[in-house]
Structure formats: C-alpha cells, structure tokens
Image (cartoon, rainbow, N blue to C red):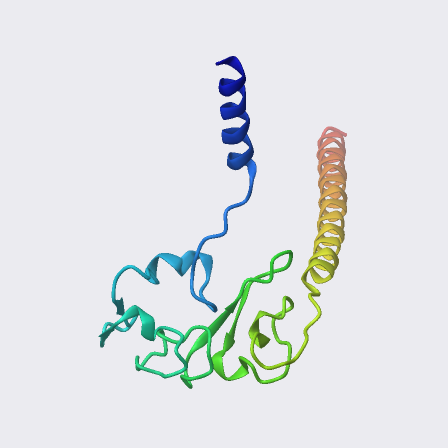
Length: 170
C-alpha cells in the first residue's frame, strides 16, 4: 500500500512537471488553438462560413479570410504562425509556406517542400537575449550617470543660493 501511494505520487509529480503539447493544426499559434477545435465544425474567423473541420489545412481555400488554411499556401491572404521556440514567434504570409525557403527559424514552414531547414532558433534567441542584456546594461549605466548629474545639479543649485544669500547680505 505504501509503495503504491509513493508510486502514484511520483507519477503525478512527474507528469505535472513535464511539458504538454497543445494540439492544434499546423500554422496556428498557441493563443489561437482554441479556435481550431477538431471536435466541432470550423467557423471562418470572418464568420462568413462554417465548414467541416476536416477541411481545415486541406490545401483548398474555403474561407475568404484564409483562416481555414493556416498551415498551407492555398489562400492568398492566409497567415502561417512560426512558433520559433527559443526565439520570438512570428507570422508569415501563406505564400511563403513550402516555397523552398526557410523563413521560420525552426523550419516549420517547409514541412512538405523537401527543403531541409536547420533549426537556428536557439542561436538567434541567445544572440537576442545577449543584445537585450547589453542594452539593459547601457540603460542602467545611463540611469546611474543621470542620477549623478541630478545630484551635482542640486549641489550646484544649493551652492548658488548660498552665494546669492551671502552676496545679498554684504
């Protein structure tokens, strides 16, 4: 009984600490995954039409706004979401999906083109974080210098008041 309880606690703790992949169609951001619920029909984001969910990402543009094809280049005004884990997420025009050019740093836009994309997100993220760290350092130094100048100006102003008061009493 004790072994079972310990094992159950371990399993719960282990699964709680592991990452969970949110199921969503290719090209959909994590913030919009709830819109693409495979258990019910899909309503175009412009609300112009409702289609069967199996028609989402089927490489045929059913919705005028392109929202039914987030992972293909079927719709001229469609948008593809690059998750770019380790870097910053971005959207691409649908025309760039499977065009043979790696636009997403994680290569997810070229899933069916035959092009092999190197995942450069971690490296780009590292460079950006280093750049941001340096910018923060420069900002802190600028703030330190500003505070120093403010203190010097206060002292100088106080010194001039004393001088004026002294001269007035002469």
